[in-house]
Image (tube, rainbow, N blue to C red; front, side, top):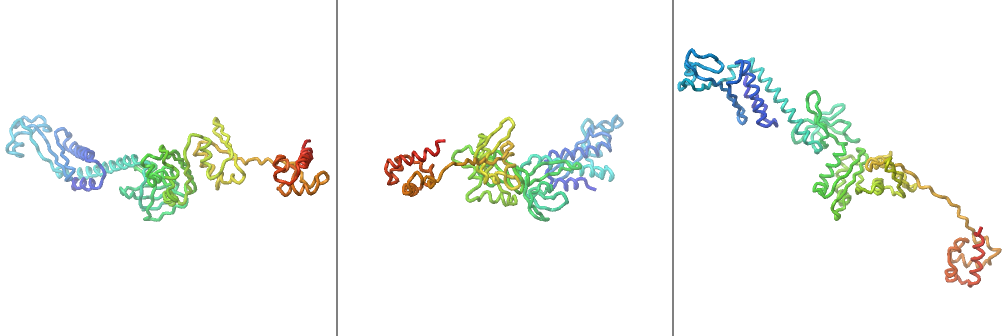
Length: 412
């Protein structure tokens, strides 16, 4: 049973740095030495990580025959000469040990220890490396479908990732062998094993997809200020540009929607509304409720409530299908939004048809007024005396008389 071969097998393909591997190996072999010799103080363990081999050396002081008081740290001259003829009293004797000297059972135990230690190191390395990658987009192949989750092999590292069904978008359907894309959401310890959790529903996934599609975001010219999602249904993204020459909404959408279309397809046709961020809360609420057109907004900054007034035909647009639009807008702006219809004031206009004045005004005069579009008393009174003279063939005296009769009707 060769421990060196075990080391060689495990060091291949394992993402463990060499100093750590050397430390583990040295620890395992020193444990082996302590069990056999009672101490490891006078032993050197030399590990060659490149070749995958090691050397064990026992170091003792050479003393005259019969003067050995501690056989752990001393060796007699006659015994030293049997190792190397050039040794002299007072020198240090280096004796190489071989794994076979420790016995099969000890080697088997050491091998098991080495395997378990390397596996622990590998777990620690996976946990550490993926913890540093939280928020990154990963691509992997579905290799196992379970009741509550999909197991995915990371395309870059070959490590197993977990995609819970709760982190999938409505409409996601994966078969074994399908490629799936998601964001690293968390790294958890399950039964002492690291579980890397992927997500397709997290707002960070949409943010990273936008970064990949919109160079201006990656370059820092456009900043994503806020994202709210109802996965697979609708999302609202507030963006801001520090360069007045750049339209952040236009840049994110792209020419004819070229940049946003790929993201929409990836998210199973999730509707994505991109709006300009502003610190003006009233304007921000107005933009957040797109595509609805707002008439008036009343804010209560203490209770963080907003009363939004719209025309009746705009209310359904503001609320959205299943209330998704208003729900996302509320989350985006940080206000509880209440929608109200504008009250249509039905004021009864007391106007009188010109035909009602036939007993006071001659018929041909009424016809002249109708010819210029005035068929009610108020429509005539809205025009000045000069305007009526200019537009009709009536005399000044007649116009003055008509205006007096009509005005008297509304004096009360």
